[in-house]
Length: 168
Picture 1 (cartoon, rainbow, N blue to C red):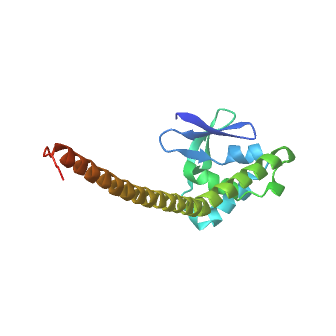
Picture 2: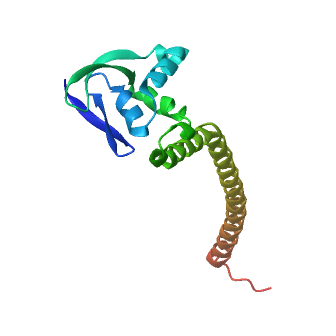
Picture 3: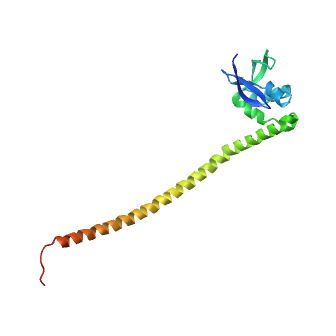
């Protein structure tokens, strides 16, 4: 079975199978110092995660193939977000806290950032429309002035080309 490293958790490589993108949770639990059986039960009790969980034969850290609880890679990040930093080994606490803060930021950016971006884009559009309106006004004034200049030029030419002498 071919595998590839997709992330590092507490300096431990986390691998998934190339074909299915499934990730065993046991190496992650071991890297964080949390109980694998507790996490497996937590996943089984979660209606959404349990629907995606499979038991796969995976190469363990000792090089032997073992059957382990696996989640699709797209669900791993959400499951990791549920891990309480108080329950991990001391050297992993800060990394778990930082990861959770990053998740909070990403969620905020996804839900509020798109609204904020829309408001910023609306303001840019308003500014552009105002600038276009100003330029249209300036263009109208220039066209009016240009028409007046052309009228005066034509009048001057007509007077110059009238080649009739006038005595009185």
